[in-house]
Length: 191
Length: 191
Image (tube, rainbow over all chains, first blue to last red; front, side):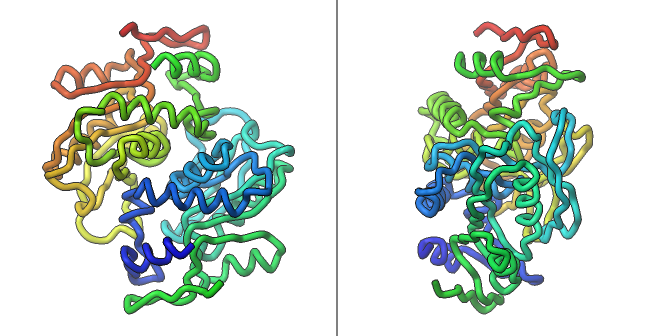
């Protein structure tokens, strides 16, 4: 998505430790109009796939997932990272590692919100090592639903999580793939 | 908001410990169309107030805040509950207690995303004891911005957090106010 690449170049900052800061439009301040455009792009990618639900994970995936679901006309389900007091009953769970928080956690979705008739697109903000996607894919598989594909806004291609999943035959359609980045500059993978 | 009261009566479940479970449309599965209607209602409440930003807090406030911001035509800023590796630089911070998680945490907004010219509406999913709002209001005050008002989707009127804030002169416009609830039924406050 050319517009996203331009936005990353204009507003993104590369920090130490392979961190791309895009807090000005995606992670902590939400550019609602721009995220709406990302939602339209995601709806367009899956326009022939009869998607019934978007699955994402708290926190930063929620706005993009919401915008995509508005265009597709389906609900969003989001996985939580902790079991909280307002989740009762049965859950699908999987283990995932957070690159941002540098810790392992359980991700949880109540079983009532996914079923075998669902056709799911997973949406998230970043794809780096693929740990969050691994967990979300495990949850889709446990539910018996069909995984249509996964779209992350920004894939860090140099961390190879996306390519590992592609090698397994999973459809990964990132909106922008960064091939190289450093404080001096960002290079995108050519389509 | 009559539609929200009806939705709560239809889909909400009262659990032990004064927990209202509305995970089927607001907390873990997002009814995107319905949340869009809540966004329109919020935009209507503040239509003459020249709102420049919506402030919310991760996680469950984000979708409602996003929908309201779409209708108002402004960005969303959300407070995070932990300092993470992709936040650098100066932050406004405040302490808040999570009723859902039963713990204290720091909430943080980078100073670059709020300034004294902003006219802020705070949006969240629940208002119970008002602890999250207290923290968000403290952050708005620290930034020097103007607090226009606060809208939570569901106020638990019997926990009095909203009324305490109203008594301080803060504009609190909840979309639905629960006066009483138990597993046997839910009663709303009359407008």
